[in-house]
Image (cartoon, rainbow, N blue to C red; front, side):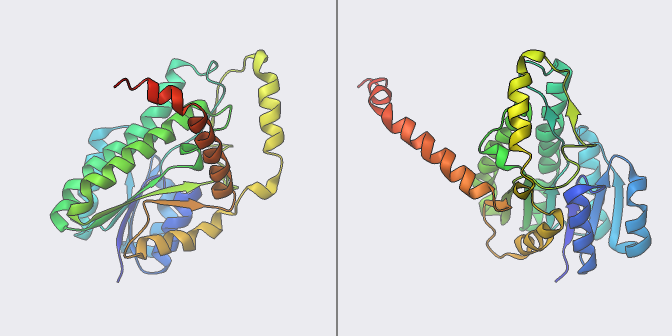
Length: 273
C-alpha cells in the first residue's frame, strides 16, 4: 500500500534522493524546502503525488502549519522524516554565539517542532512512523564538529525518550545514523567558523583522516534501506547507514566500558550508603 510521507530538507542530498525513491514506487510525498522552486521538477514529473511546501523548520508556527496542511491535503500522515539540518565546521572555541545557536536551532529545535506537530495527528490515527535523521556523530565524536556533535547527541536523547512515550499509541520511532556520505553536506551545505591558528594541527589531522575516500558511502545506495525501513512492521529504534559506523561505535563503546569499569570503585563509593 502506498504511504503518505512528509520529508524536510527535500531539495538536495538524502532528502531529495529519498523523496524521488518514494514517488517512483507510488507513494505520496510532502516535500519541503526553504526554496520551493528547487522542487519544481518533482511536481512536473509526479504531479498530484507530490505536495511541495516552503518551510523554514526554525519556525514552530510554519512547522505546525506545514504538517497540518499535509495531513489535510492527503488525508493521512503515515511517515515523517526529519531530514533538514546542516554541519557547522570549527572547533568549540571558534564557534560564535550565533553559529552555535543557529546550529542547535535547526538540527534540534527544527526537528522538535515538526515532531510535536505530527504527534497529535498520528495519535488520532493510531499509527505513524517518525524517522529522525541523526548521525553516527550522535553516538561518537570527531574534532572540528563539536557543536554539530552536540546537536546530534541531543537528537538521540530526545528521540529515544520519545519512543518510550508514544509506543502505546501505535507510533513507531527510528533514529537513522549515517556515517559519512559523498553528499554536499561538508560543502555548500556547511558553515565554517572563523579559524584560530592554534588549532591548525587538529584540523590538519582531521583532514588527513578524511582523505580516505573509501570511508564515504554512496548516497544513492541508501534509498533501498530507507524504503525497507518505512515498510518494516517492526522498525528498529536505531539504524546505521554505511559500513563504517558499526565498527567505529563498537570500538568507542568498548573503550568507554573499560574506563567505567576501571573507575567503578570510585563511582560506587560516591553513592554513599
